[in-house]
Length: 229
Image (cartoon, rainbow, N blue to C red; front, side, top):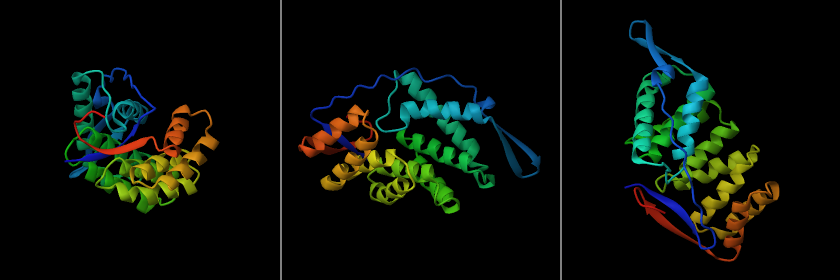
């Protein structure tokens, strides 16, 4: 059973209102062809692929996921599963950083939606991306963000997030703060949250989390898949 480190703030109550997940014709997103026998290739409509991925990310980019209703979630699960099955067959042919990174993000969404095997696929694709482009800021950050969301991979998040921070990703400070909190390392968490709030003073939620961390008003617990926070 998967588990997630969830920060419960006694002073902060967050309500997420999810918009409707869209209706997409996936044949317009990616289509397969076989110009050479036994070697399939794909045509990807990148603007539409990015639109679908952004929509999925707004609902299931983090755990727990947020949907207005069960039909929306089922449609999202269907879209992730179908896109993954098509793109996985030709992933070895990709040498485009943006496509590979988006495939990794697609699998991370699948993981949050409890689609079997998605977590392992996300790890494999992220590893592939960083083997080719080890200093890519967003690849390091997105990988760290994904790893931080699971207990199974959680400890491995810190090096990726620290590297993303060193490469100039401002949000890495915030995610490091939450990750260190979930690991019980309060001082490191406070240091990173202070760094983030100094650079992004308008983020009121981060400021509340920092205040709660300083004043010992944060509790962490393990939340199993399917439970409400």
